[in-house]
Image (cartoon, rainbow, N blue to C red; front, side, top):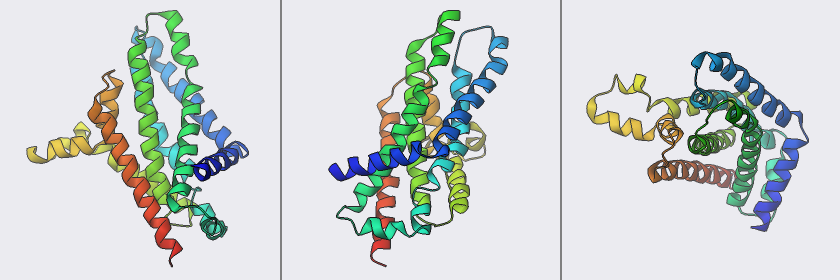
Length: 238
């Protein structure tokens, strides 16, 4: 546990000592607020449904930009070999980087809480749905982080990592969407729907915390952290 905490602290320090963290937070907050308020006053009701529907599409580009350097840069700078010589387990290194990422993600989402607080003064806001939607956004972002972290371990090229991460996250996100399900035979619809990140995010965003949605996210995150660990282990023995 001490090793995981040490790596988490190191990664968080790296985040906030570089402009990347501040660029990420600024783009997320400004773009999200601008896109939301463009149509908010036309809706005629105090709701954040559209606000949270925008988050996955921003995450789809911003989180791969955040994860593309986590392993790829280590490989390019030859610091991964040094890291692997430390008396730490591979899973500790992976978990340390992942935990730092989800903490950073939580901080970013918390900084946007000023939006629902402001809206609550305008009208009656359903805080149950807002809190559930924030949880869904955090879980979705955590899943994107796990996927991006794994993709970054496959290459030492950050641009390749970025592009493949976007493509992978996008694919897993939309496979449960109506547009995709419409062209599938009936026996495949339920399967694709269950494996779609977007389907589970939409479910939580309705304010219903179904244990199946939570288990889905935890399972997906576990799978990609496991694959990431195995990939780092395989490199150690090359």
